[in-house]
Image (spheres, rainbow, N blue to C red):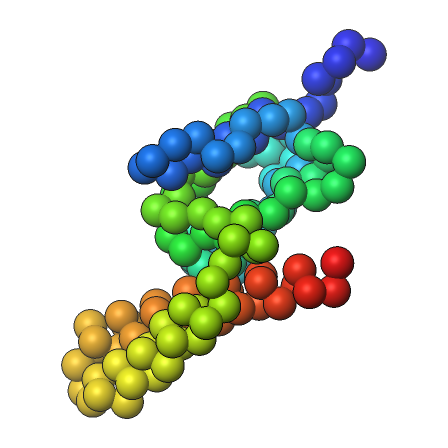
Length: 142
């Protein structure tokens, strides 16, 4: 079997730079409707990303994780391109800043009243902060 057979080319890109580009066995993505796992040969799709961790399996010795806040993923049978607004390694997350973001999200939520757009924005801020805190917290046990 040739090297790279049945492997996905995974590429994680932000507006600033390419953060990650490797061959992998699988990648988990936080889509807006829940996490999805992509393996080689997956049906083509485009998914909007939610807040959470992108986890790449089989690219190296251990899984590689990046916390993303929003973006899109293009899935093709042999490659996955993740276009993220922002992506951080869990160890690079500023926990105090994420806690302040969570507090701000709760303030926005309480002030939203009947305004659906303000409510959606508050939920987005809260979701992003919670995902960052969960990602940063999972590094404490490693």
